[in-house]
Length: 364
Image (cartoon, rainbow, N blue to C red; front, side):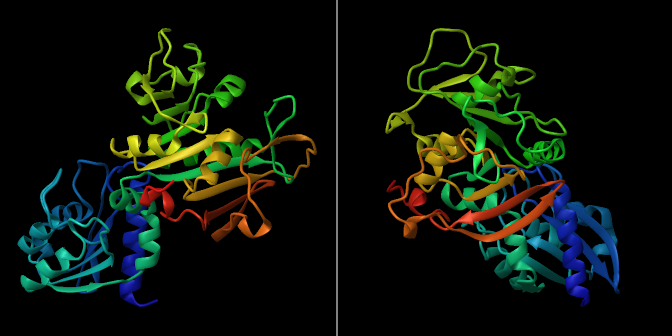
């Protein structure tokens, strides 16, 4: 492994320390190298805090002059919540900047490279660009389309059932898998469920470790109980009940009157609503009708399918309501990965029919 690749890999590791904490900003890592030695490391800790480049530059102080800066994402060249990083780089006397991925934000895309070069800073770009772009897939989707990146999670048997025909769904996957899934929630801005999941399972929808997260319920007829567990320990401002028929009952949540699509809450409208409020990454946790409906409309960007080594036979399908006209129309997952968690299997992939397609053009 050459030194540039080694240093960029380290910057990648640093960026991941901001996992679940930086939204609506991307995860970014940076380090300063001088005379073959790392003199400072930094990353973006949280939205509103120092960007990774500034974090590293502050730690380096006067030692930064003449050094090389490795950064996973193109530095910002405009002032937003914080001052422009390109100005800080020039002021610190950095000799060379090696950048991983370009910033997809059209306000900044490619502009920092031109600015730095005009100021006499040597710039290289593209090292691990594919991997570092994928790391911030949620931010990239939101900043370019206005829609949050949507991940759908399904926990099912080998034959695709998420619950017994009686409605009992506890538990299909193992305790190890459920703990892993709960920890993974930490990376999201919001968790979405349908009202049937709330009524049958009464989930709390908490993360591990606990963090402030938005809870979204699709509830056409406002059937939710004010005593549902998802209200426990949550700020009413963080709970959104999307309904076509608001109720007079007192609910400690934001009740949003919403349009319907084929008799159910219009999920595309909901996603656009959330995107305007800086929600960049949504996890759909159920139920089967919500997941199936989202897939049917091309509103799912990524699938996470947890499979237990069990066979149920008759039961409730994990993607109810999804109908294809022929085998040729089946939804194909791309860029798949398969991992083993205890006795269960996690399959991840990207539906070929979404990929920022029809939903971003507004014709669904």
